[in-house]
Length: 551
Ligand code: GLC
Ligand code: CA
Image: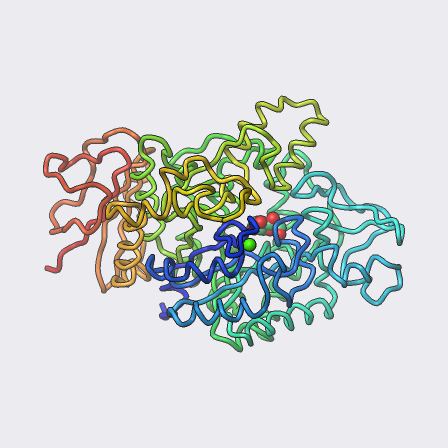
């Protein structure tokens, strides 16, 4: 497989609103990011992906953009952006921006024009119908079609009412997108993460969805539309292929069998995608607020299937949490008695899989979910809308609050915990825009940097090892013991080296581990002190990486 920088890189995702407040108004900003670039360099990540920093009324924290060429006032200005980009490049890192072009904000001038009358030249920038043509639901509750009084028609919004879907059938819309991409690339940014990119081509026969099966609707109705690949190829031909950039598509609703249509090297569409296989494992028919239990067997099955599907032809990005999902250690690990051990085990998985790993801010210090006991403390419109609808339906609101504690997006949006001073050192203001997680006195960057055994230094070590061992990047992957519901073990190998990885996904000591026999191995990395008495045993959440010694 051809070597490229974006396959060898490790991504770190910044959610700017919650990262660091540089000017004391309670909201994270670009000055805050600039202040912390040395910290990120110390961790050893290569690419910073910034969730949207563009002008926005913040209905969905920047995923509703009203001006694609301006920096959100709360985050700073273009001078701050230029300084930040320079600072990132000066430290040998790269910057990837969030491209949110399935929809814009309703406050974007295109939509303001579009809604003003049926014959406005911008009318066709969005989808308008005299009556809702189908029963589509919005991801954030309610119908996906909204009546708009000025012109007496309905417009489509797969997300909130303030996020009208752009009409990619219109060549002018596509040219606008390509032109704004060039604007940022010409400034020197190193690529884009593309928000819900499989949704940009719509099924214009407007088929109905099954209202009781939202997960299937995503794959069959919203994603993978008829002209999608034509659009992605056009975007590549007209824009991305002219720059040395990383393109990674957020890909809900893309099943493994179609992966290579997006990322196959012969396709010239995207470098890689973030698939949702594991992220939607626990969704019930009602979607995310209807969570089901998940098992390690199915979890491993997702990784195995995706590995087979993408094979030697394409590439994917690996993530275990981001700004839309619960904290990795709370979701896949044990965030109580084995928080540190399980956070390190998950780091081991993330950084020894095949694919470009993406680390979400705070995960490098083992931050956990938060459980606010009042709805008032929540800020995410998804949670707030769900709560309102549940109330209208007469549902049990205490039960819903428990579900929010488990799946809500604000779990990962509380401020990054920098130290043990008030508000975790995130802001000098008395009130941050969202409350800090009360566990900041124990879990914070300052404490992590003072402890050589911290989750932070474990990440740092793994990042270095990955870089020094190309077999962990390009090597093949083969699962061992697929049937176990607590052990995740696999082999990674290439002509540069061979590794065996053993992960005990349980809070119990496990014996009779099928460690390799008959070959000489050396313990390469582990989250526990080596101890000869545990020869065939894995301690709770123990992770071991063995390297096969040269013959
Ligand atoms: C993506 C984003 C999410 C956002 C949605 C609408 O899923 O990751 O945060 O709410 O798209 O833009
Ligand atoms: Ca600020």
